[in-house]
Length: 407
Image (tube, rainbow, N blue to C red; front, side, top):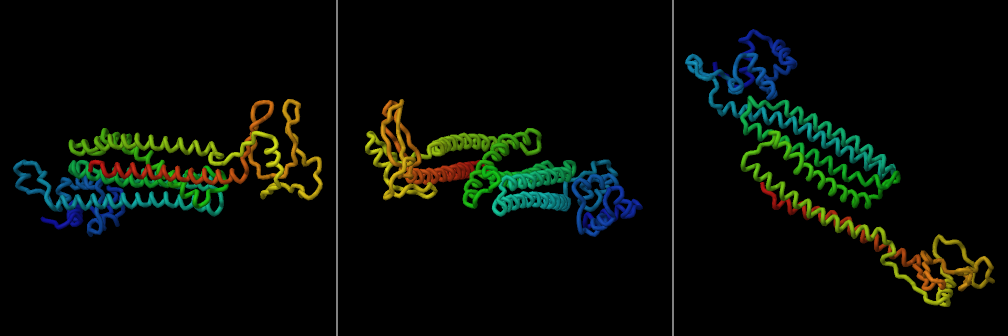
């Protein structure tokens, strides 16, 4: 008897075996409603269930997928019952593969959604509650949950794969799609983790919006570079060696070529990062780099400068020049018991004073607060330029790799 679908064939085999839907459901550890949906073609069994059904009813997987038994003449002649896969069986297998991948994709997108939710929680803690460290820690919890959800999804996807039911090409394509989706999910989690990591720099005060965007972008670049290296140089080769990913001559040659290109790009990017990092270190350790210094080689000019009545915000009140000077306003400069000069300090725009090393203490170098503030502002701007350079270097190397990689 010919059957038009997998569902009707399962129903016919069940009835021929004298089984109820409940009996079959019990043997498969599913509900009778699930069996009913299969027989109405409202759904299909998982790929892992097809061999079990075939064994229960004494048919082959190919017969089950075709919806009919093999030719009786071939069975009588003792020829193998396995026939060349028919278009109907192939179509049915593709439908089952698509169903399994759809279920896996759903779990993957749920995992990515959990990671995004962790980012939202971290941003609320940082920008609203001003608790950067707490935001990062809560974000870590959600992202760990995302990784666990993705791991469960991969395990479920591999359980749905039956190599006896599918051809080697179908198995390879199935695994490749699972690997691509898993890479997308783990990459998304790594990027979000990199974005929230700078919140640790702000202790419990939180980062401002502009600082968070800048440092977060740098964190994303660093996280994605590390993830790309782990994926391309560690995870993918290991999966090829274990047979999870296909290693045909053409695909493996392409894979090997891309690995070499990735390694070279990583070396170039590391060199660029080191050079930019050296520049950033020089700026960070020299806040007076752009401050104009005042050098005094005699005491008279130094005293005249220090007695200029200059006030700046935040400094204590100094005596009015029109009022008589008090003794406590007089500053005496001496060395080795010898008085070099004395002056009435009225200039409060002084940030740093350095003296010579001989007995005269000359020359005397002064950095004013005004000049230091200008230098701090310029250094800060250049530091932001360095952070931007990190991002641009990463983007440029990533674009080069993407354009040159073998597809």
